[in-house]
Image (cartoon, rainbow, N blue to C red; front, side):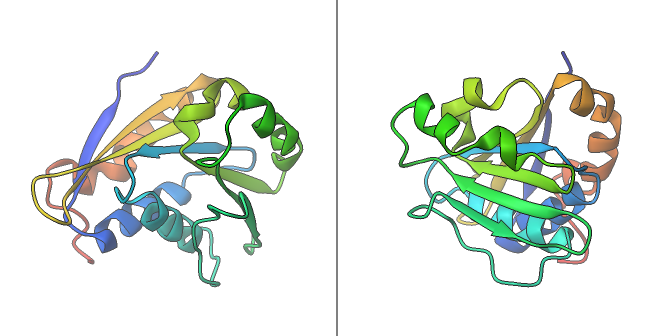
Length: 170
């Protein structure tokens, strides 16, 4: 198991920039699990991640529809919000396995609640409130061989946020 990497974002724009950077190292079949309290920035992360995949359409949380799909130029995004699901069986009924095709990445908001249904190969992104109104602490934990093999790349990718200074382009 690898160690978690913790970074900081001082604004929603920095959270989105961090997510764009992580999208740049994502591969088809990847799962990104977003965890954190209500309002912590999971949807802001999803918006930045989609932008990083080249998706131009607006991204909103699929809280009531459960799943939204977006087509990118190279990879599609399956964006799930499992907050309203009561049981792991409901996640399985969504066809999560079928969504992980060769041309898509899956982003799961509230995914920590359904980890057994997602398997053991994902990047956990835990977003917590910081000291200021817009400050966020973001902890990344690679799980499974694919993400474990990229743990150094994950660290290098998020290095601009490691000192708390965030992305200089924001």
